[in-house]
Image: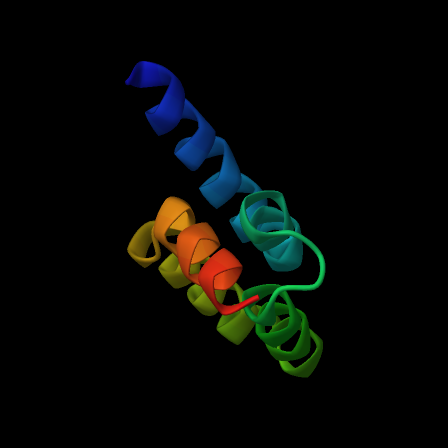
Length: 72
């Protein structure tokens, strides 16, 4: 379990430094979360950080993957 918390901590740290990078590591390059985060970061650095941290903390990537593969 410590490994999961460590990965989440590193993703959040990267999301603070460069918001799309943290989201990319969790959801991949062509996900809607990444595109929104990239757009918000281009429009303003702080909204990108807020969205990236929200996505990394609030969304469960396993649930996201199951829903994506069900729709595809």
